[in-house]
Every structure is written in structure tokens, then in C-alpha cells.
Amino acid sequence: MDTIVLVGSLAGTLTTISFIPQVIRTWKLKETKDFSLAMLLLFATGILLWTVYGFWIDSLPIIAANMITFCLILFLLWMKIKYQ
Amino acid sequence: MDTIVLVGSLAGTLTTISFIPQVIRTWKLKETKDFSLAMLLLFATGILLWTVYGFWIDSLPIIAANMITFCLILFLLWMKIKYQ
Image 1 (spheres, helix red, strand yellow):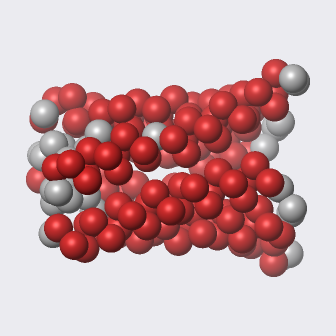
Image 2 (tube, helix red, strand yellow):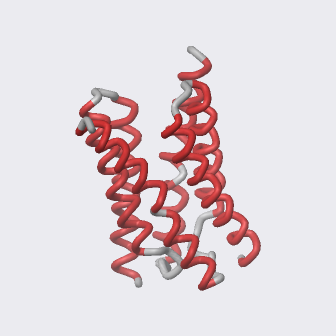
């Protein structure tokens, strides 16, 4: 595989999977005070727009990475509202 | 401006600026217990690789957005280590 494609794929994989340990921690602790609601809302909206952009330019990696991230962020947002 | 470029730019702007209210909140509260250290480390590494990728494909928007995000995440990571 091309090194540049590998770096991009690794970057996308890391930024996407990074939210998995966060969701697990928040699910266990049931504590969300430290999170900024504005951050979660802005980030979720941005990720949704990245997904739209991915569909537009027909890029499966952008669609997949952002759809997964969006689901994880939506779950964090739901816990932020539920546990605050 | 092309609608697709506008959606992409708005997406990048939102995901980047979303960390500003988070940094402000964490700076004020001095509380980082709810954050997963693994999330911050994986996310920071991913963003660093996105910056490398941006330099490689010579994309100023990718470089700029990810360098700003990286600085904000690095600051959060420093506070996570300092205040935990």
C-alpha cells in the first residue's frame, strides 16, 4: 500500500477508535460533568457535515470513519444529557 | 464558493473550534477525571498523523485545522495529566 494512503488510513482509524475508550469510561463512571456540552454539540455537527461531505465526494473511508465517530459522539452526548 | 467546498470547510471549522469551549471549561474547572487518557492519546496521535498527511498531500486546510486541533488536544492532555 502507498505510504501516504497508509498514514491517512491510520490517522482516520486512530481518531475514530479513540472515542471507544471514552464511551466505555463514561458508561462505567456515569459522570459527564467535565465535558463541555458545546464541545459535544459542535463536534457532532461537524462530524455529521464530514459524513455529508463524504457522500458528496463518494469517499467510503470518510463516510465510514465519520459515521462510526458520529454514533460514538451521539452516545456520549446522550450520556452527557442523562447524567449531568 | 462551491457548496461542497463550503460543507467541507464548515465541517473542518466546527470539529476544530469544538475543542475551544472544552479547553476553557477544563481550564476553569481543573477537573479531568471524566476524560479517558487513552482517548486523548489516541486522538492526539491520529490528529498528528492527519497533519503529516496534510503536509504530504500539500493541503493547507488539512494542515491548519489539524495543527490547531492538535494544540488544543495537547493542552487538554497536559491538564488531564496535571489535574488527575
